[in-house]
Image (tube, rainbow over all chains, first blue to last red; front, side):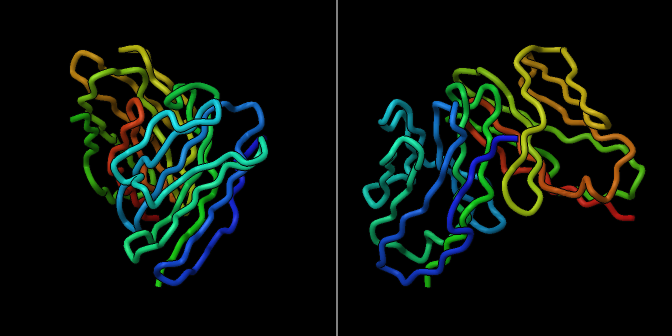
Length: 115
Length: 105
C-alpha cells in the first residue's frame, strides 16, 4: 500500500538552529500538508501546498516556516531559527483532493526536540 | 471561528464493552467529516462522512453523521485492547482534540 515517508524520525536541535524536515508524499497525490502535534495536545494544521504554491496556512505558520517541493517528489518543511516551543511531532500528509476529502494519508512523523 | 469539539476527552472501559465517541462541529463550509485513529504515531484513516444518516461500517466500527444537529458519532462494539488509541475527528480541515480511549483487559 502506498505510504507517505518522513525523515528523520527524530531530530534534536539547538535553539536558533535551522531544521529541514523531509517528506515524500504518495506519488499520485496532489495536495500536501504539514501538521504538528505538541506532546499530549491536538493535531494542528500548519500549511497546505498545491501546484507548487501554498494554498492555505495557519497562524502558526509564520515567517520562521517555509515549505518547498524542490524536485517533484520531496516536500520539505524548514524552520529557520528554532525555538523551544517548536518541539513537537511534525506530520506530513498528502491527499488526492483538497482538504483531504478522500482522507489524508499521514506519514509516521518527525519528532523534533529543540534544546 | 470554526471549531470541532470531541467528547469525552478520555474514556476507560473493559474489553467487550461498546463505546460511543462524539464529535460536534461548527464550520462555515462543511465538506466532509473524517474519523482517524491515532496510536503511537501517525493518524490512520477510518471513515469519511459527507451525507446525513448514512452509516459507514468497518468491522466493529461504525459511524454516522447528523448534518442538521452538526455532530457525528463513532461506535465501537465488542472492544478489544487493540482499540486503545486516540480517536480524532476532522471537519473540513479543522481537527478536534481527540478522545483518548483505553480498553482494559
